[in-house]
Amino acid sequence: MIIAIDGPAGSGKSTVAKQLAQALDFHYLDTGAMYRALACRAADLSVALDDESSLAHIAATDRVEFAHEPGEALPSLVSIAGVDVTEAIRTPAIDEAVSAVARLPRVREAMVAQQRELAHAGDVVVEGRDIGSVVFPDAELKVFLTASPEERARRRAAQQSDAGIAADANAVQEALVRRDEADSKRDHSPLTRASGAVEIDTTGMTLEQVIDQIAGLARELHG
Image 1 (cartoon, rainbow, N blue to C red):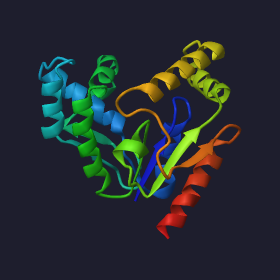
Image 2: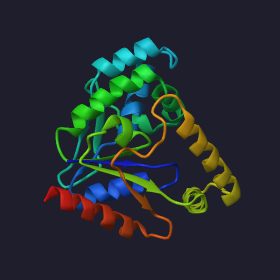
Image 3: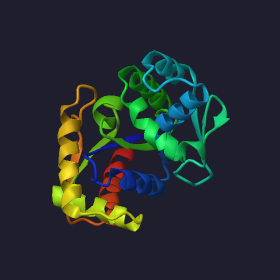
């Protein structure tokens, strides 16, 4: 079973997806780690981040694989072309490189093919901004998480504060609104509610309430 969770920045989809996968004994398909692995591979091969042809070729031929400990939703190991990049993909250099790689249309097309192959190997929860609309339009359960701009800004500011980063809620909200507009108007894979997706407004809801609601929907479908 594939559970696809979409939503705007700050809607909580990443946290929800990871904990939902753990609650259902599913695997969390970390698509972000896949693009990070590709960026890491490109660096190792000295491929420029704007060389779309070469990057797309790597994405099409070098497989990203995950390993999981028994009972764990999150992967314990990430590899590409057989090389362990679990730690390497979390470096500041890859933080800066991954956006440039992930925005290239031919790269995304090749990575989507890998994501579909991995997801159909078992029960997974996967999240993003085009997961239900583009990557897995036939997912058994599609969810579109949303919340008011004020609530999303409050959550994002709290996350930054917890990480030791000074955050102004008004500035965070303005940035989120700008990102929403950019994501919804982009040419490739725009942010949109997928056909058949269940929309859940998480404003005022606890994390546990959101997970319980989605888990209930999944269990109804799973029989």
